[in-house]
Amino acid sequence: MTWALVLLLTATSAFTVLVVHRTRPGPAERPRPDLRRLLLAGAAVLGVLGLAAVATAVLTDRPDLADKLAVLGLLSYFVYLGALAVVARATSRR
Image 1 (cartoon, rainbow, N blue to C red):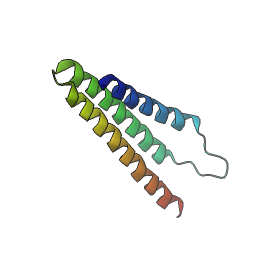
Image 2: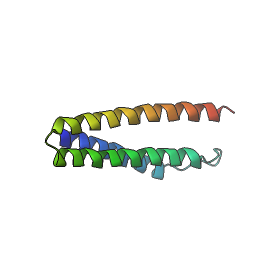
Image 3: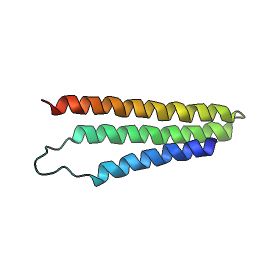
Image 4: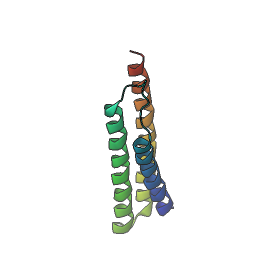
């Protein structure tokens, strides 16, 4: 179970980086480098949490602790993305 959660963390982080790098703002849109940086920072933190979960699973005798860390990291990342979407929507209305 731990390795599936670590794979999920890594895949979510990689997908976020891929989406940020593949999307380009259109000519009518103004570029938002700050939001791109915040998305990349969140993906980096999620990747580090994946490494922490792996280290916890390998170095300790409690793999359930690594599972909890991975699930907590993934849920926190989704809350972070939701908050970022609210901020992006609020700033786009100005």
